[in-house]
Image 1 (tube, rainbow, N blue to C red):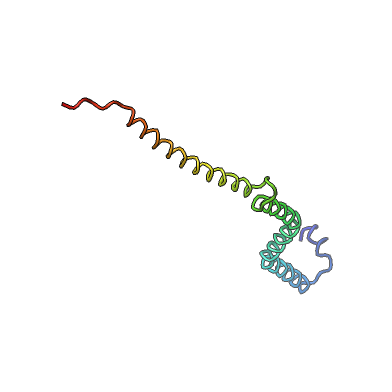
Image 2 (cartoon, rainbow, N blue to C red):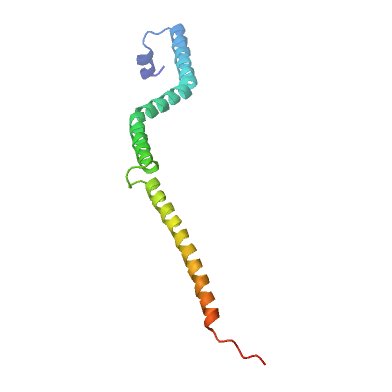
Length: 119
């Protein structure tokens, strides 16, 4: 027997050697079986570790969205839409005035044009 093996085994009996081999293979088998669960546990722990920062970012985004979708004295998107709608409503009134003015100008133009001579 090689000297390194004799040193390694020392006074180990064959039964102890079989026990150690079986124990090592059992440990490897348990490790292989538990690896997916261990991997999933590590993934969950990593996700949970980043959760407070995620919550903080989400709260900040919700505050920004809340600011834009509620009236707040002119600085939100909702206030801007209200101003645009009021401006468009004012334009409809102006278009109605212009339509009436256009009709009266056309009528005046028809009455000022000389009639062609009739034969």
